[in-house]
Amino acid sequence: MKIFIKSTTIIQRGSLREKDLFIGIYSPERRLIEFQVEMKNIKGALSKVSNIIAKLGINICSGFITAYPEKPDALFSFIADITNVNITTEQVVEKLKKLDIVLKVSFYEPKIKGFMIDNLHFPILVLGERSLTFRIESIGRMFKRLYEIFGSGASFIIYQMGLALGGEKVERLRSKYNMSDEEILSIILNERIAKGWGIPELIDFSKIESRAIIRVYELFECLPFKGKEKEAKSYFFKGYLEGVLAKIFGKEVKISEEKCIAKGDDYCEFTYCSL
Image (cartoon, helix red, strand yellow):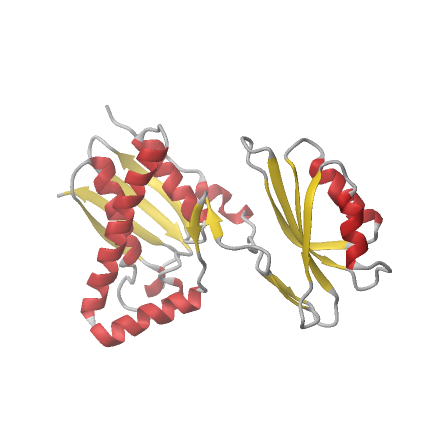
């Protein structure tokens, strides 16, 4: 039986909005305070906290809420602008603590006015796994440095890193979730969007025939070299996908990058076939 999956990612691509992680804000001459509110994980809890903040005339600039369905408590953290508010930080805290759904309130005020960097949260978790962030430019410089030192050998090293990580990703998801391999592949591709790697589209897929075509827009690995190279530049991601599909197909696969933004194409496209 032929299994074919057609992604709708490309249709949604134009409507995607950027996601600014809760890291910090720079707003000169503004008085910024970071609040961390631990509260009961019940319906209406967030509304009660935000209503208090609004009634005090405080503007929430950025924030996040973590509320897992199976846990009794939730976390609401936000950066607030209290520049023109006639109330102390301690008074804000006391008003929040009076709410029956609030368990604990913490705050942080930066030493440099108007320059707020999150000081109340560590480490960063993505789907419960410890993670970290790098700028795209930093990734590009690291790869460029590898190419300068090791020449063509750098591409092999980068490819091997991706290959190992891709295979490990499938195994980890298999052990964590009771899902089909097609569902696991869908999760992996969609997670690349959420993690900022790029915007993938599954053009063609057949598990029986060990065949797949995957198109990726804005691929992080190639963006630093956009339009500057004569050849495709994705070695890490190509290895990553090869590792993923080798586990899903249960056999080694070979990939070729037909198109790449590094050489001026609109997207990177990867074609797979069984060895």
